[in-house]
Structure formats: C-alpha cells, structure tokens
Amino acid sequence: MAQYDTIFKNATVVNHDGEGLADIAVKNGRIVALGNVTGDAAEVIDCTGLHILPGVIDSQVHFREPGLTHKEDLESGSLAAVMGGVTGVFEMPNTNPLTTTRETFEAKIAAGTNRMHCDFAFYIGGTHDNVGELAELEKLPGCAGIKVFMGSSTGSLLVQDDAGVEAILRAISRRAAFHSEDEYMLEERKRLRVPGDPSSHPVWRSPEVAMSCTTRLVNLARKTGKRIHVLHISTKEEIVYLADHKDVASVEVTPHHLTLDETAYDRLGTYVQMNPPIRDAVHREGIWKGVSNGVADVLGSDHAPHTREEKDHPYPESHSGMTGVQTLVPTMLDHVNAGKLSLQRFVDMSSHGPNRIFGIANKGRIAVGYDADLTVVDMKRRETITNEWIKSRAGWTPYDGVTVTGWPVGTVVRGNRVMWDGELVTPHVGQPMRFIEAL
Image 1 (cartoon, rainbow, N blue to C red):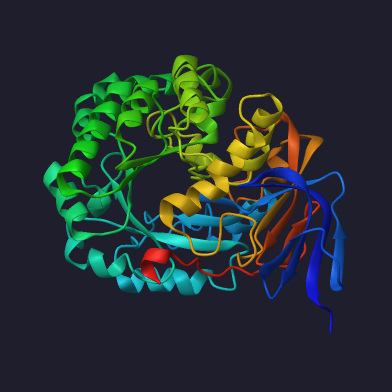
Image 2: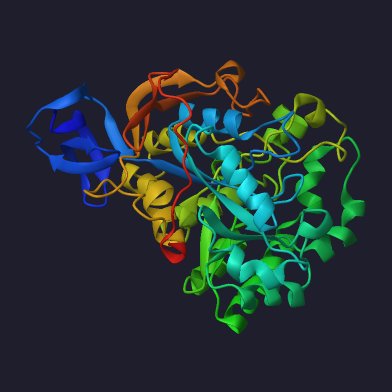
C-alpha cells in the first residue's frame, strides 16, 4: 500500500508563507505533507517549471440552473470553471424558480453533487417574503450565505428599500452579499439610455447610482451590527469610501472591471454590457488602487452568460452579463506578468480571501489538513483566448483574440486531477463546500 495517493513534485508553491520549491503529498483528498517529501505514492507528478497555487475560488458565478439552462447549467458552467483553473465556485440565486427556500436550495445541492466538475456553494436570495426563514436557511450545508439585490433585478429578488434590507440584516448572523446599485435612481434615470447605443449604459447606471446604494448599505450594516460583502465594485469613489469601513464591509472586484474600459463599447458593443457597467479608465485605475492598497478582498468573475441572440438584441433590450469563470485565471495571471499585482496578491484574493471572508472550512491555502485543491499554472506560457476554447454553453468571451502570458495547466479538486493540460481527466467530482459558521 503506497504511503501517499499523489505527490506533486518540484513545483514553485505560492502560499501564505511566500513562494518556494516544494513537494505536495496527498492522501484521501487532503494535503498530508509539504516540503521535500520522501516516500512512495501511487502517482508522482513532476511539476518542474510550474507554479502551484491554492485552488482558485470564484465567489460569484451565475450558472443559470434551474430554468435558464439554454445558456448555462451547473455541469457546463463548472466545466468552464475547471478548464480555467478554478476549483470552487459560489453560485447565485437568480434562477427560475428563485433559490429562496429550503426546497429550491436543496434541489440545487442535489443537482450539483457528483455532477458539477468543481466544488460549489450556493447563495440563498434574501427577499421581503423569506426574511423569517433566513436565520435557518443561511445555516444549510453548502450555503455560501444570503445574497441581496438592491438594484438590477426583477420580481421578489429585488429588495430596494432600506427597511427591507435592515430586516434581512437583523435576521441573519453570517456575512451577506449585496448587488449595490440604487434602484430608485435607476428608475429615475432610465430616460438616459440611448436606444442602439450601449455606451450609454454607464451613463444610466452612473457612479452616483452605485455610490448612493453603497453608502446606504454601510449605514445599515453599522445600524444592525452586521457584516456585508459588496460585490463587483465598479467605481473609484466606492474604493475610497469602503477603505473607511473595512470592519463591516468586505470588497469584491472583477477581472472585467480591472481589464476593460470605455473603449470596449466601440469594439464589443452589447457584448460588454454588464451591471454594474464597464466604466472609463479613471475608474479602472481607481479599482486597481484598491487591489494594490488592500481594500479589495476577493476576485469574483460575475460569470453571467447569455446567448449571442440575447446579446444581439438592440440596446437596451440586450441582456446584461458576460462569461468570465474560465478567463479569470488567465486574465489575472497576465496582469501579474505585466506587474499590476504580485502572484501572492492574486492568491490572497482568489483563495485566501474567500477562505477569510466567508469562513470556508479546509479550503483556501496549501497546508497540511486542508483539501488538496490546487491550481497549477505555467507563468511563462503564452496563449490566445478564443471563443472556441470557452466551455460555457454561451460559447463566447469578450476576450476572444486576446493573447495572455500565464496559463492554467492543471485543476486539482480534493486530490483529483480534474483538468490537466487542457483535457478533462476526472469528471463530476463536485461536492458542496463546508463553512465554519454553518458546521
């Protein structure tokens, strides 16, 4: 009987204690030894020249199941994740039916288990109607927490009023995630949308719309003594403001807000239409400041796929959202190679950050006793991102034709080599994540 199941040898391991050559030994899905590992293993994988990162966790994706599976489902979305080096995802509740009850939540857990390719957690939507059940719902196994849309949603998932948000915050004990755009201002400003011109999207959904909602949200967090997570920050003003409120507010930024600017509307039209929107380069640099000074805690892709037909509708009938889970790692590694952030800061935002902010049990770092979730990358490999590479059912990416330096070559989930060198090796290993506050 071999001492270990697998030893990953001779990699540069990037972790909480820096970067350095090390071997990683795995047994029964957990890391059991680190450093210069001796002993026999059923499989020894030579990783000379490669970097091994703690498994990348994308803490904001929309995989559209149930109800909208013509553009994505749990299987196709998680395939895109592992092909891009992502070992775990937090998936959002705006499905059909909405994920707002124990029944709809547990149905999604059942649908994902042993069918998704990566590990997963699902958010439960906080609404006016289910506030009485949220304290129980947020403790369900596999629940990432409560997600609230203060803008940019329809039906019962929209909670635009302070009283409604306050009631949700008072009901729960875990950190809640928020889409922070002021719905009242969005309604007032709809006249600013120019038919056929998606570049008017950030005029309608202005920086003031985001900032107004975020200040309201922080005030409610202080009033109730609760923790909030502000998703997909798109303005320089919010970064500056949230720096003074880190005790109650954690901050997510996205690769697209760090990569694209207003010139993307000329090239991509409605294919770059997002909520909150892509803004000008001044805001993009302000968000980068939040990466460099530590205000930004985590990276989320906000993977929100739509079909080409849905994106091709004339603005503003066109759907908001783009694919992102598969391109998160390569676009950010390209930024690392360009000197915009260090590899350790990327690790801090993509694995340590989710672990710290959400209290994920046994994930988020390379350490003995932790799940053997590993993202293996070649920092020197140059590749061109193409629509053909994208595994999302939507089949397109705003980065089609973009050449990057730094590429995911392996995705290891609890010791299973799921993706290796662009091939799906071990499918359907996905299990619900566990959370310290809900054990």
